[in-house]
Amino acid sequence: MHKKYELEENNRLLRKAGILLNRSELVRDEDIALAFQPLNNYWVGSPPFKVWSYRIFLEHTAQVMRVHFPFEEAKRMLFHPLRTEKRLNKLLIEIMTKLVARQFLKYA
Image (cartoon, rainbow, N blue to C red; front, side, top):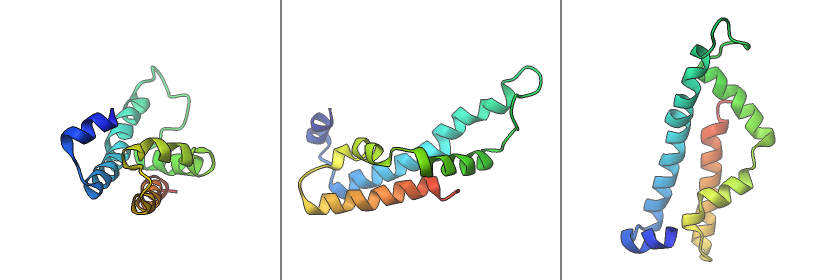
């Protein structure tokens, strides 16, 4: 699938890197926030756990991610479109991995 779109779009390496970084930030700021939002209002009666704001949820999630999140596996999946044997690409993937991890872990 990636190869098909690569041929059609012909995006440069830095363009692809920017898209991946922006998308991972949107996951944190929009996708996860939308999934979190109904939790506090879902329960009939009192919630079975302490009600958290999204900010507090991110802080606790970041602490859990530091210990349990499979960063190496996520790196392989997320940055698959950038993988080549070029040293520059490998270096860029390592830098981007740290940036994406920081996007999620900076709340801890």
